[in-house]
Length: 114
Image (cartoon, rainbow, N blue to C red):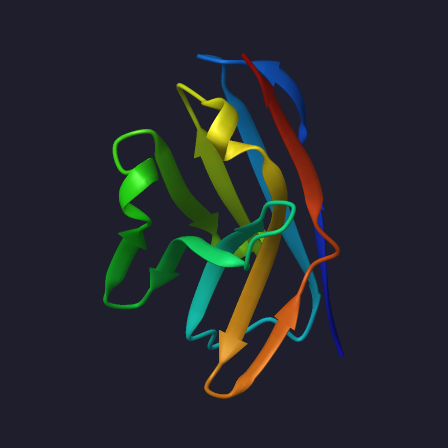
C-alpha cells in the first residue's frame, strides 16, 4: 500500500512563492511518473506538472513559474511555485503512477490573494 502526504500549502499574496512537498510512504520504486494536479472550486482537476523518466512537462499557464523536482532517496516530490497569481488558487494534489495503477494524496490548499 502506498500513502502520499502533501504539505506546504497556505495563503500567500500575489507575486509570492510556496513550495509544496509530497512524501511517499510504502513501496515507492520504479515509478512511471510523479505529478502535481490542482482543482479549483467548480472546475475539473487539471495536471499542473509531471515528472516522467523522459522528462518534465507543465501546464502552459505555469511554465516559467513552477518547477517540479524529486528526491528519489527520500521518495519525495516537490513543486516550487513562484510569482503566484490569484488564478493559481486551488487544492493541489500529488499523484504517483505505475502504468494504470496510481495513488493520490489528500490535497493541500493554496490560496493566492490579490
